[in-house]
Length: 166
Image 1 (cartoon, one colour):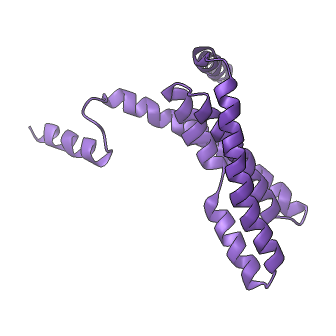
Image 2: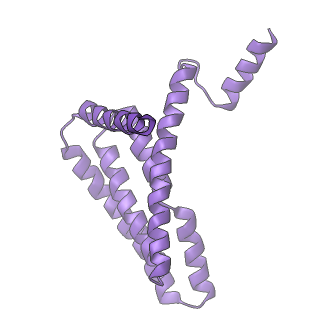
Image 3: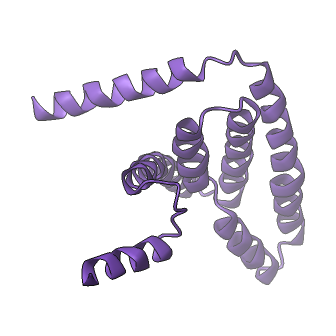
């Protein structure tokens, strides 16, 4: 009886809908986590490269524009929920970075680099939103073969996992 009460609290804390079975929720969390890991690593790599080149905010702006294009494409293609979780919520969510853009803008203003701050704000807003719209248009034109894409991703992951074990 105590166990069922704990399970009910866990469902509430995890914001589980009663129709969504627990294992499906765990699988969805895993998809988001795998996608987020890839997006975060890619953003980190690009950020480190930008630092070595003596740049920063410009690359964050580019990351946000490319990420908006990618997320728009996923949304426009109306991918199945698993692909949306993996690529949209996970990868694009971790790849793009509103918080870094915000801090970079404040730092530029504090350093009295107003033209750069303005360019960053315009680039991150106007260009990223335009890229998202373009991505949605591209996504709507993609063939509706989401099953093939999901199967390809699953197969690649399974091959990678078996190579790691072997």
